[in-house]
Image (cartoon, rainbow, N blue to C red; front, top):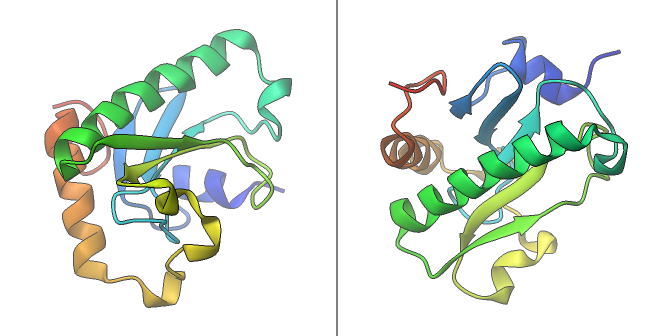
Length: 141
């Protein structure tokens, strides 16, 4: 059975994409720590990052690095947070998000999906796409 991330990647569930290539995608988290919280996900379903081929692991980290720089630029923050957790969805992903302090790393403070501001989510996606030079499906312009 495919993961929820595979369903987003395949278009079966909606997603606000900011980056897309043949092997890695990045889209906004539906339960963000802060607006601009991105999930960097390999297209291939691999549960634990430690089970991933080293080349793919290097690739998703390179994309997370690019997203992190875009987050800093787009949201004018001092840092981009980077967390690998992986308990909530069995599909490797890196959380990248605007960080102003350590409080922004507290997953107890996520904004529940049913309480996110849709306009703020759309604005965050637009800011990131502008910084990354990508279009609405996440591909480079």
